[in-house]
Image (tube, rainbow, N blue to C red; front, side):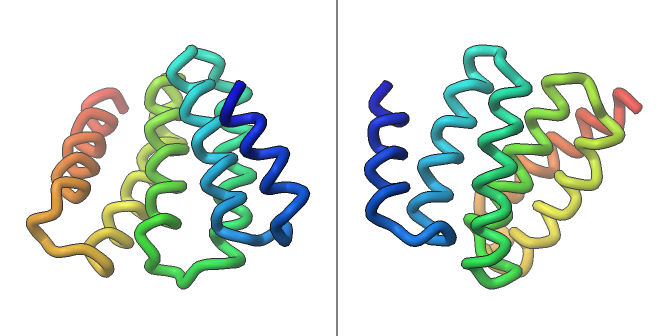
Length: 119
C-alpha cells in the first residue's frame, strides 16, 4: 500500500524517466515477486528497466539490478532459458562497475550455476 502511495506521488512530481520512479516500480515488483504474483512482478520490473535503460549509463549497478531481478524472477518461474542471458548480462555489468569481491558478483554467479543445472 505504501509503495503504491509513494509511486503515485513520484508519478505526479517526477519526470517519467527519473531514476527514483524506476526505484518505486522496482520495489513494487519485488513485493509482487515475494507474494508469488510473478506476472505482476514482471510488469513492474520491466517498467523499472525501461526507465533505467534511458536514465542511467550502461554499466550502472542499478541497471544491472533490474536485469538481475528479472533474471531471478524467470528462475522462480522456471523459465531458465530466459533467466540465463539476463543473469549473465547482470554479471558482466557488475564486473564492470563493482569490485571483484563485491557480494553481488558471488550471488549472481551462484544464480547462474543454479540455472545452468536446470537447463
